[in-house]
Image (tube, rainbow, N blue to C red; front, side, top):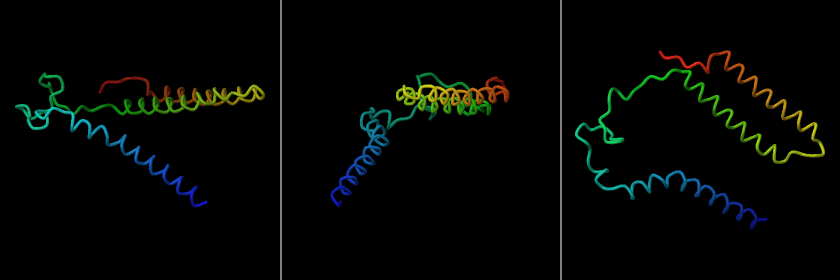
Length: 128
């Protein structure tokens, strides 16, 4: 019993260590692989250099709330697609009608979300 628990803890520790490596690894790689002149010098204006051209205007742009709502709807549907793919893979031939009805209900609820968002005006891009 104790050996099984310690084996599980090793897997948990390895998983956490891998997550930290994926989270902080890119920052460490960029620090060591970036040329030293980019870390030690600034351009004449002290602004970030994106493509070698001087920026025009202020960097702080006010976005409409509609942009964020549009993004949230997109994320919600991306998560729903992640649910539909495994469901389609385990589609059972024995209970095909029941499974089809469940999928139609799920997609129907998603359709109601689209109709609700459309009525609220989320898909209308207005400039302020």
